[in-house]
Image (cartoon, rainbow, N blue to C red):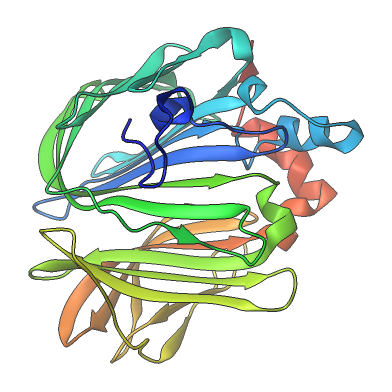
Length: 317
């Protein structure tokens, strides 16, 4: 994968990123089909931040992030949705600068596109997602962001404007659309740095808007509102008013920035600590559909929530 803009050592770059004990790294893709009917998210985790097994391993001592890896796929289509997030141990993980293998699935960067070969079993409802996804960035950005004062949580919007080609055998799906790629990395568990965050991105006419807001454990806030054009140029913009959205089915709070009313079009994922939604808003004078995430890390830490997670996140050695 592409190295972080400030990384020059290939032994610690791309998918070879140095992830310390108790730390994490993930590579994230989301996409919406050109006709708006299909959606997809893919997250490749080293040190799976939402893993109950990794959380348990950290209780007694420093835990090895490579022993807790997963490829999470969320597929949202007209016939329903499918979800996979099987955790794999170190022996089922291999990586180098440009490729990452997790169990039966893999990701590879060839300098022009990110190709993801998926072969995963769904949970908790049995099923399978198998096929290939190819993401072609319009450009690669050079801006990365430190998310807290200690500098141990970082975010890089690699390719805010991309195209995607989805070719799946199970279920049988073929579509193209607009897509987004980013990556996060941290040297400490994410729940130790933040209590809640809201993240959203949407494609405007000639740029992509990203909103990133979080409540840090020290009481301070992260507030980012940026756009990227097709050449990767970044501009900050003034945050519009915050609109309260209906809580999810699990009562996770949701809100979105908008110059006019905001409306939840569809709740894609609804869990005890996390909601992924499609939200209609207005930004910079344009109507835009956001891929929107709400995350309660206070909820995630609760013992009852940790006990629920293995039903959707099985572990295979």
